[in-house]
Amino acid sequence: MAQSQAPAPNTSSWDDCFVPDPRYTFLYAKKRMACIICKENELVFQTEMRACDDSDDSIPVLLPCGHVFGQACLENWLDNPNPACPACKIALVYPVCGHNIQSRPLYEDTIFHVPKTIPEGGEINASCEICLEGTKHNVARQRWDSLVQVLAQAEYRLSCCDPNNPLGTEACRRHVEDIRKLMDEVVEQTMGPRPRQW
Ligand SMILES: [Zn+2]
Ligand SMILES: [Zn+2]
Ligand SMILES: [Zn+2]
Image (tube, rainbow, N blue to C red; front, side, top):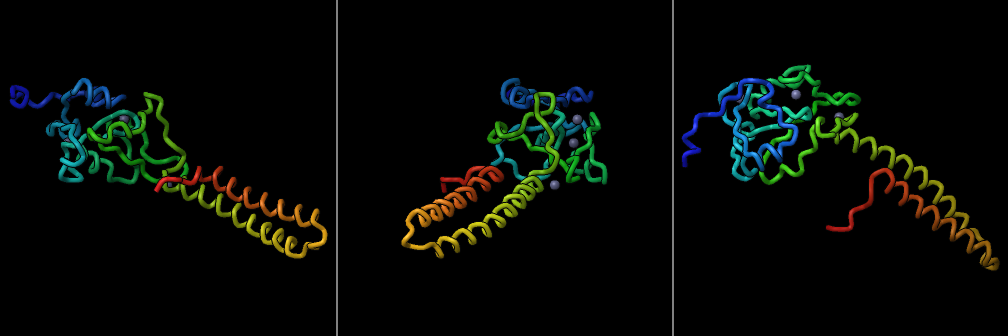
């Protein structure tokens, strides 16, 4: 095909690697571009299955600012204590937890799962996914633990209820039921709904 004989695309200005909507650039416009760090390797948009190596410079990787680079070159570039985008210098650390923001490789089969870039309305979270999950889990766990104690007390009171006083027994049983429901609500509010599908 004539296309394969065409010279490597000329990526010479930082603007050439600005890809605010990678779906448009790679899936629709099928723009050819080279890694702007080495100005050598052509970025190849392919399926994840076909990509052989994890740090292959032909794999385009996206940063939240919308800049795209070859994977190997960007990894080298970011290997320092203050990682920042080579083009716009945006700091690539989460403001609260301080962990590094990871670039997202762009593959045909996963491009629709890549978050929106900042110019398209995307946002950088305060903390990375792992830290956010950890915080949510801790909050849920603390509230669950305090409810466990309340439930144990309520169950104890239920066991002491006078069986000849059905009103008292019924009230205690409803109280226990309410606490159980509250435990589920607390977890759902904090961690999201429990999955139903296996
Ligand atoms: Zn490169
Ligand atoms: Zn940038
Ligand atoms: Zn973190």
